[in-house]
Image (cartoon, rainbow, N blue to C red):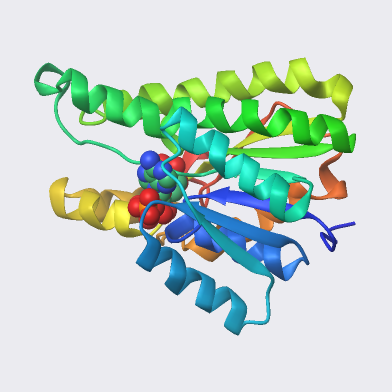
Length: 251
Ligand code: NDP
């Protein structure tokens, strides 16, 4: 039910953090995983880790905020594999600043990286999935799809937006046997939150006190949900948003 042998998965931002945690899970389940990021050294290191573990993987350099680069990325996947079964829109960033001090460039950077990139990639994936008669789209939201944060206006807006965008494509493409869902990670220990801990006073203590599991999540904590949402096991699950947060959202 969870077997991904013969499937091709593309994970944006799959060269580190949560993306690499999910890429590992998908590859362990048998998929060939294509990781896409901008930093080639980081991608090469991630690729080595995957291949050293005996998994099938490749990498393509792409900035997923750039329409032409997204088109080239999907063309390369099509040329190399002739198919795309699974798309994980994970690339993301943030700028931490009070709303009154946020510049338009900062707003656009976060919206482009977290939301517009998912639109560009989903649109590019659709013809491949439609031709295959099936597809799985996993978009990465956040616990901040649900909650606000005073220092993260565009991040919260983009992560709320991706839940609604995912519902829309789930409706539009259900007839094509494409399922689209959002994963809402809680507080996960990655480069992104390492800088948050440095910049937001008291964050570490607040996260530990508030999370029922009483720990930060780890990138590998996201592997299981990625496999579930990429596999036959989730064929009747679409348009939903699933927290993976150690219980943070219900506390
Ligand atoms: P990281 O900063 O560790 O990873 C982000 C990844 O996105 C990097 O691999 C980066 O690769 C890639 N990326 C960023 N911008 C672009 C771009 N323009 N084009 C292509 N790739 C890009 O963060 P996390 O692993 O923590 O975050 C992954 C996702 O999970 C994000 O969407 C984030 O919002 C979300 N999330 C994280 C949480 C956490 O607690 N860590 C909580 C909730 C959600 P490169 O630099 O090579 O381009």
